[in-house]
Length: 170
Image 1: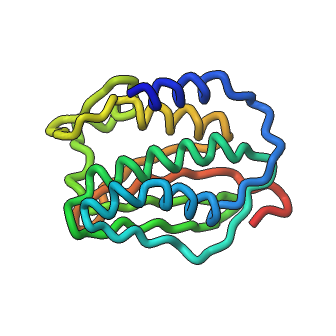
Image 2: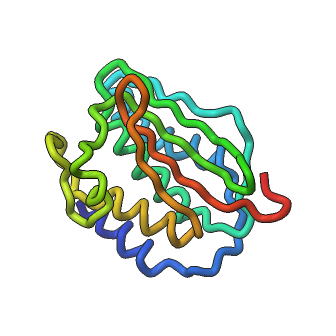
């Protein structure tokens, strides 16, 4: 809870001026390495993309905080011995990072509230603070992006973090 509150305060006060490049794949690797213990405790396989992508004029700290919270949620939601798939896609001037798990997904009645601070979804059995997705949404907005949630085909959830590409990115 303390880490989440500190992260929330940091993203709330983060500069809106974006001026550093973010190399997505190394950032994802760092986050997954940091979360390797909870993933291994559930015998999860986290599959990373092999796609290289760079967001110019961004903020590496905000990006890492957003990705950490999304991947941490996926690990928490995923059933034991399952997989979490992460993809990077670029389409029509946007870069999209997709994090997909095989957990129970987000209840339809919770979708409009899932990024509210301290919200715990229907049927959630983990001891989370209810701040993770609020942190993600704030960080993504500060980075000029958008956050989306969708049910995954055959069960689970797909979390999409979408950012506009500047000239010369990728």
